[in-house]
Length: 227
Image 1: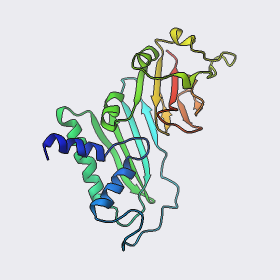
Image 2 (image 1 turned 60 degrees about the vertical axis):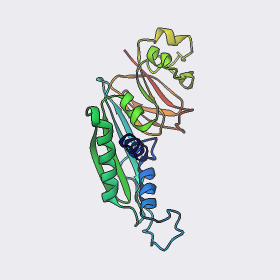
Image 3 (image 1 turned 90 degrees about the horizontal axis):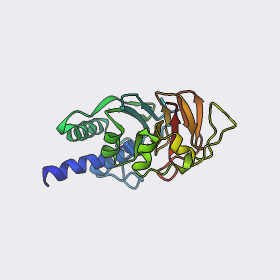
Image 4 (image 1 turned 90 degrees about the vertical axis):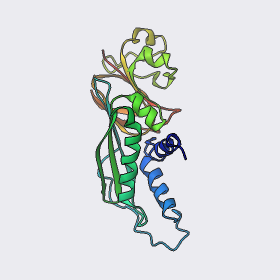
């Protein structure tokens, strides 16, 4: 197998799509160990995780365009190898960073039957390339130019004027406002005050929102920010 193909394979294994990156890795490790994750073998399974996750999945955007993403996934089978999972993450990051360090591992631990992984990305472009999963932080005009469908934020209530409801005609006026788009369920923190939020988010304060409904590529979480 060529070096390029091996690198591409490792990147697919550690894909950080939605909240399933760790599940993908865990299942990959189970297959490598020659065991079936559905319990159809002789391996003794550890009790399923019953404790609450140590923290929520989250996405933190910063003014410089960098983003920190934390994923939390159950890690509750006795045939999962923390050592091999750690190595797979390290190798995948090394492969992506071969031309320059753009992603850094901030935190990884197994706690209460859950795996928690935090990665720092230089940009949402690096997140999207590494995970093959959309994420955006930029201007409203920039999002439209890239083909993002912003309809899911329409009818949002202006947080500064509750009598004002967002319409498609308002996008031109807001073209220079920042916007964030996330396609998996996670708590979101932004660097500027939230002006509008998509209906699948609950705004908890000026800079934070949490999922209130399903989040996906088809129904992304969208926040339009103040200038």
